[in-house]
Image (cartoon, rainbow, N blue to C red; front, side, top):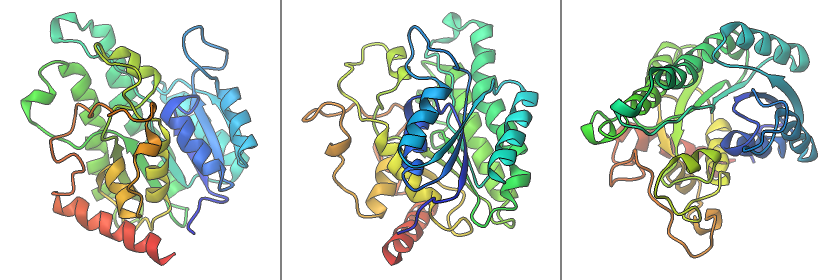
Length: 297
């Protein structure tokens, strides 16, 4: 089977949640993971640190590197990239996972919070890609994968939290632009988004949500693994959902990912009724390539 053995992943926000689960999935293959996050001491309200994440990565069979990094600062990003290359010899995969969330209407959104979301979401996605790209160009199967939704200009996705939506779509526009810019260089640039609400620290930011009606981050980790082990030149420019990717490789039992067995998870707020996005011809074509590749191996 295709795996990530020996590959080096640079993952932002990898001390907990989705980023850590992607790291652990890669670690089970024997990958090297640079854990990029700010939490190096236990937080009173949030689980995990960069050091506890590395301990879990190494227990799972991978190699970890804890790098305290504020991705709002390009100098810190540059230093983290250099330390990753020094430790592991290069970078094969960038995961833009870190994100700031504030689901507030315009009059309740302080500009300080607006700036934070744009710095962590859109700006850092671009800055991390810019810093990693010279090293990705040297990889035999380079990937950039960003946790952001399919772009959609329907007003309903902006009405209740314009600032947050702009910042997340900014991440998606980075995917769109880099996929086209670096297609000839053979660098895959894609986005991945969940069909349902995922159990993470950010879930507590959403009012009115029953905490048990969510899926675990493992569903995104499995979907990311399928994308990242696919041929970069064949699979780029896609805005994927977790369910669609897993269905493409033959996984249809999503109950296994439910936080609470027997419950129906909430649908994610950024997706149309066509939840898998497979009505998009470009996405369908790429999903077919992922499926055929993984069937062949």
